[in-house]
Length: 393
Length: 141
Ligand SMILES: [Zn+2]
Image 1 (cartoon, each protein chain N blue to C red):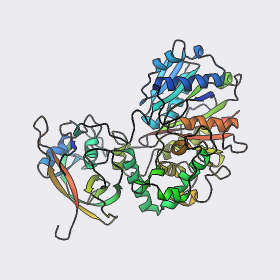
Image 2 (image 1 turned 90 degrees about the horizontal axis):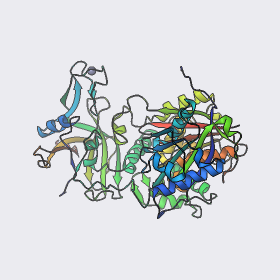
Image 3 (image 1 turned 180 degrees about the vertical axis):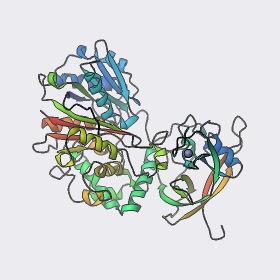
Image 4 (image 1 turned 90 degrees about the vertical axis):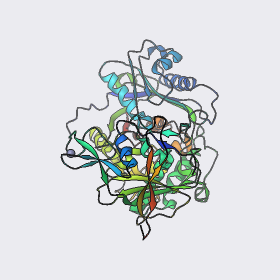
């Protein structure tokens, strides 16, 4: 690969989160400010030094509004990435690009949503009896009742089961490990709610083969990180989480529109994460055997499972066996979503995964991997995706 | 089913699909130069990059590739339970359509489907709105 990526030039110097809840009672700008100010305080950077902001394309908070809310200085860089959950690692990548090109020096990257009390993803607010057009291509899906990400991922899960023989009892391990990790994380929404295999198997079927506990946890909350040069980060309050590599990928022929058209790809199970992994590992000079913790995007259990294969932790088609052999635990081959992730910490659309990747590097996770020095963080596949690798100094 | 969620039929990118449906045909964008099928529609052929693309009728039968029984209602016009099926067309490579069946329907990879056309009536601009729908094939077709 002819790649001019430069390793280790930028770092995450601070991380912050708002409270996570089912009803925040405050605006998304207020949540974003809570997270951004916490991240700046964590780094020991005064808000007036912020000269760049990167948002998610689905966020309701503009870069300028966030800058205004926290008392940033003149923003010389503002950008956004997405779509949606594919965004967070690409948002960090954009902050890196801004810093490396000299357009900013201190960039806040954030995601804020009232995901439970405000706009809920699973519910169709679309009461217009006509659907589609404007090159959304939902006219090919909505009239058949394919109207939520859950139904989409249920079709993906069923195809994977058809092809590999994955069982529900195997798939349960994703949710069970996430819950176990959340039970040690006092800020997780599911901190005090233990879960057994019987609880999982007995949970309500929402769209076969996916049950309630295969779904993420709609959450009100925000997460933010501060990106700056590694050189500067070394002099700040916290040990830096050095950005070894970032990568984005669409894969070939990603189809137009967003999520549902993925079903029309040459193979619906072929996610861009496979291409993203190749670029990421090449840029990092590392492979899956070097990863100390994997914070994988998990809007649904099946979403995380596909990435275990795509990022090379097991062979294609073998994730079912891999996840039932204890490999997702803190002492396993691929410690998984050590904050509880979307399924049990909270659904901050992939941004909380970046924060947890940093905690592992610092040794501050509530499910700390002994001696962790390399974190893998991924964002949503599909329709396109992004990922990053953090290393300790 | 009474009230229906209708497709928008007059978008420039996809209206050819619904024009063919109004004639009782299942349409897929097809390259006049290399015959490659391009589904979903694109501005250029995915095979050769050519611009001369036409909506052509394809076979109205296929087989289930994946399916889900939806038990949790997400839209007022879609009472649960219902079954969504991803159908791979016969005689084509990787061309898929989505089908809807009321209730919990047992489907597997051998389940065969045939297309029907349901007239949902004209849209607000008077365009015919005909939706290709799918039912499980029986021996007598
Ligand atoms: Zn062609």
